[in-house]
Length: 184
Image 1 (cartoon, rainbow, N blue to C red):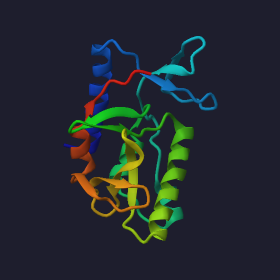
Image 2: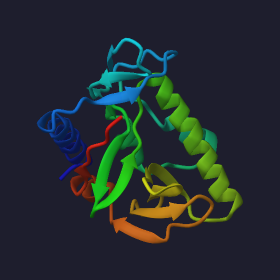
Image 3: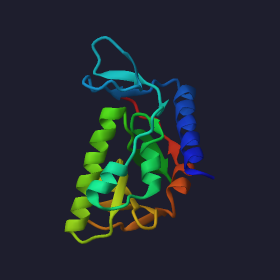
Image 4: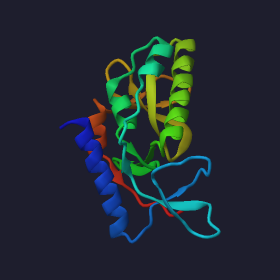
């Protein structure tokens, strides 16, 4: 299976799951962004309804890789350049996680800046380069990362190397995620 197929299937499972449970897809809106996922804001709410949108002009990691003088794993670039969506509440073998996503072009730029900071921290600590794709529900400093060399998906605490392998690649990881219901 291709990564794009696994990701498309996850997005479809996610939307269907929320519809089956009669739950709205809600996200805290950034009023400074023209994010294509933002659909409808309820009066007096900080949240808006959202729908995933395929990126018509996929973002590129080329400038980031050039600035870092470091090729970045293709799977991470493909993940962040496929859909605009809110962060996805998912389960990996009953472990609650958040798969980070980008709301739109402005958020894509913010994500790249954060990834650059992460790579620079890994260099400074002389650790293998990883690229974050999510966080664990239990702790904001427990990251889901992709090893930049092998493409393996694992867990690591901020400032530490990966300590637990979750999947040998991002495609397998995405294929085995299950949506979970989060009430806003």
